[in-house]
Image (cartoon, rainbow, N blue to C red; front, top):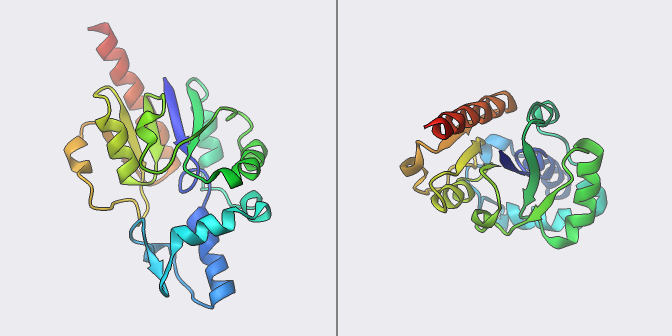
Length: 193
């Protein structure tokens, strides 16, 4: 099975890292639980604009912390064709690939897709932390499955509930691995029919 894995919010703790920079640079302290939607703002600034600005700095991109359990989770998916899909800007690509090589050397395939265009990813499963990416992905073909890596910012008023039979909600990597096993078993049953 082909599995596309997003980086930020799934492999890398982008929000935790940017909140540390916001506190250092602007003197404003926030928790991840404060970031309750994709286009969250603080002090009149857009979080995702800050992330884009910071990712242009290779040192920042190379030092992003891992999402807990992500390395072990990726190792457990070794029987599948797993690759990275990201909406990061092209100016961050070299540092991003270096970061991936350091932490996930088995993830050599890299697919760039803008946010909202991940339905064009050639994959059976998408693991992402934003509901609109999951919805567009599963809506594009009835055999596709989405795994929403749940954070406070993951749900953004989409119609994701309409795809409940094709979306798995996973708050941590152990559950992601279980969801992939369920999807794989479901596909085996469908193939036997």
